[in-house]
Length: 43
Image (tube, rainbow, N blue to C red; front, side, top):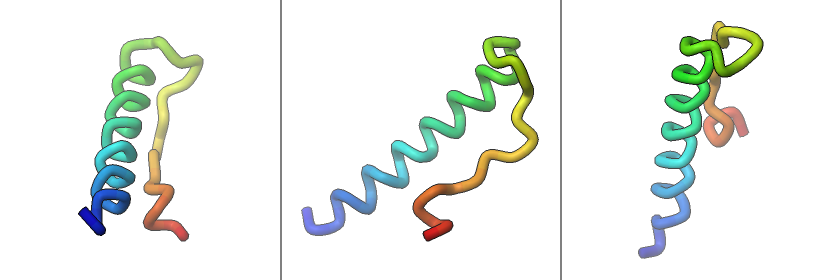
């Protein structure tokens, strides 16, 4: 359980990336993302 924060943050990040790729490719966004980077890995 001590690593649950790390695991859930990375899983949530992956879900968000997939959502925005799909939304961009299906026209739900006003643009198509060129790059969706990682938030937690950047810090």
